[in-house]
Image (cartoon, rainbow over all chains, first blue to last red; front, side, top):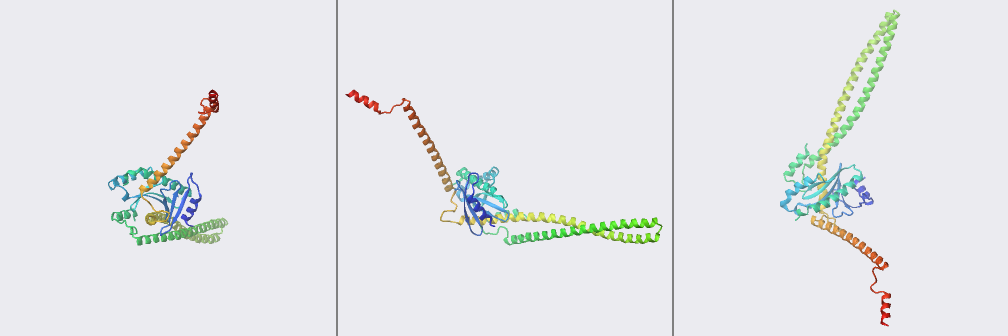
Length: 135
Length: 228
């Protein structure tokens, strides 16, 4: 029983709060599922699993894409924005600024779908809000 | 082992290269094995506990039996005394004495099992806590490894349908374009509704004779009649 494979099948066939999903498995050393929330395709979400967690990542921009002199200020604000942002948080992965959500591996599919649509919405809002920080 | 401290230390040391061992991979594998071993030991300990609890219960029953026998024999001894048969009473008394000695031994065994059960339960609880804690620590390293690997896959993939990650500016452009398209559609819808409503009003005015057709047959006939 492969969690990502089952999830992929489920997402392709379901409708959740009016949203539908489109999935693309990415094979490699670490299995990743690329999910687009239909209507919010600009911000694809990448899902991977560990023994205990389901990790959902939305890659927003790299350090190189922002004005260097505003970096410290940006980091400060993102930390503060983590509290109001539902179900996910800002995270730095290598040089990528991301929005990152973690779920227990045993989570219900409803929870995963809620996470996905929320993450996508948060990502779009964030990109629009942070426009001034981009070069 | 405070994994967060270790991770922070290595971050400070600039260990950002993908694939670079942030926390000693070998140490982590050993750690993982230790957790597995601990879980096996825990399962064995729980089985052991079940056995000891069973033995304790058996000993309890045995003790209870002996005590009943003692009570029974004491009754016989009393009867013998009442019949003034001291010799018989003495015989029974000897039997009672042996039973009492056995009862002491069994009671000792029971106490021993009882203590073992208490100690074992407490050790099992401790072990469960430690395993949970170790799993939490391992989850941190696993999450980091998984995300690193996933990011590597994602950022290095370039496919025909362009599923690689673009820049934020590109994403923003697409978002704005889509919103503009949606706004245009919305506006077009509004405009269309207005047009339809406008035609409707025109028709009503004409029917009421308020607005006349610019060129009406009646007018033309009237003009021609005047020309005649």
